Amino acid sequence: MEFEAVIGLEIHIELNCPTKLFCDCPNRPGDEPNRNTCPTCLWFPGAIPRLSQAALEKAALLCLGLGAEIQPRNAFDQKVYYYPDLPKGYQLSQAHLPLARGGGIEITDENGKLKRARIHHVHMEEDVARLVHEIEGRTPISLVDFNRAGVPLVEIVTEPDFSTPHEAIEFLKALRAQVRYVGSSECSMENGTMRVDANISVRPRGASEMNTKVEVKNMNSIRHVGDAIAHEIGRQSASVQAGEAVTLHTRLWDPDKKVTLPMRAKFEGPCIPDPTVPTIELSREWIDDMRSRLPEMPATRAARFVAQYGLSGEEAAFLSSDPDTAGFFEALTAEGIAPRMAMHWLATQLLPAIKERRQELHNAPVTPGRFAALLRMLSQDQINANAAREVLLRLFDGDQPPAAIVDACGFRQVSDPEALGALIDKVVDAEAAAVADLRNGQGKAMGFLIGRVMQASGGKANPKIVRELLGKKLEAIL
Amino acid sequence: MPISHQQVTRVSLLGRLLLSEEETETMTAQLGQILTYMQLLDEVDTDQVEPMAHAVEVSDVFRGDQLAPSLARDLALANAPQHDGECYRVPAVLGDA
Image (cartoon, rainbow over all chains, first blue to last red; front, side, top):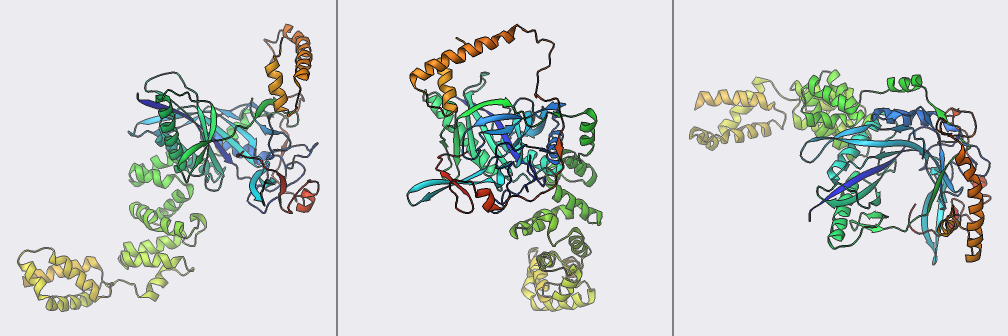
């Protein structure tokens, strides 16, 4: 029997506003344990949660970027469960009246066909405390850090619109790009600012009923989400094939063993309206004001890059997937660098060099101005590509202008016909055998001779002019 | 009966209340009586009434995003039955949240 999968995603995203969702503590969960707490986020009895306006605005921008419809009236509920990461016994979450409904993202399936993945709703909630499990002697204990308690989250719940790991990955990449564009979060799965749970079920191909789903958690990269979904589809297909029933439960992805393993069930209680946080009434004007703050979104920007700069769809999508990269690219073109050269050097040289140094493009020492100055020297044949690569690496070491580095290293390209002519004469005299090969019609001896001239110049000769002059010289003697 | 024996067992488990078989029977009967009484509300015609989201007629109470000093850590941990100077210590919980 052939199976197909039905996949839905639940994505938690940590908003990057300065304070927590309901109190004035810093929204910095990675600080030293329990440095960022107060009676509200330690959830002491009687503390009154007060909603952060910045969190609401960042959440609303995120929703509008996804084309979701902001609900004029939304409210918080108490989602009841018992666990040491939530000592007050309930999490404030928008279970009944979420911030936004609808929206979606266009993705391409494996065959390149466009497909819309729909969003069911987006709601706000507070994060819970972080638990660290340890063994003291022979006694297992848990340590609780409340820095993360009360950190503002949005949860995006999709419709079960995905049928392959590829589609889920495409969606997550596009989602990450969109959220970064609106500036609501860095969306890093590695750092935990984006967390993804996948709900997966399988059914015979072509069937319409939905079977029992399994929830898979604990993936810490987008690639792991794909791997976990692929593994879970295989596991469920095999068990259905063997005549076993799939039961509703939660599994954890084990990235080392590359399998999903069952997780102990956690009791979840009811959701009841919260009496402490007043309802949120959002006017048409407020929503329009938020919408007017939306930047140009990645898909629009990619289409503009194709039209304006003549890039391929793939190149444009690559550049526009990250707002910093797209901005850097446009800054280079504004400096007069040809779009294709800007794209090529950014993608193949600068970005890998920045990644290798664990830096970020927006605050790296290689600014668009310095990088453009370097590329300008390359396009004007003042240096060759090898030298440009070398100078780029040195741009990371200080703030010297590229021209100063070129001069200090003696990288300036020799284009003077007289100096190059002398070198060529010497090489042609010394390499009589290669010249003879050329005479016998062996064209590849030409490349060998150019290489010799380059070598004789210490790598500084302008290869274009060498080729031109050498051609003329050989024409004369052959 | 408006509430079943099974539902009472589940609710007591969620509330971490250990009820004997006899107590469960009593609770099922008593909760049933309360729910039966509350069913009076079903007689009210609510077709034209918008569902209530909140008991208080106040909305849009927001807080500007101004950082304020957090508690000193020793103060935050002061009431904990057990701590290690950095974190609260609690009995082990298996699995993950």
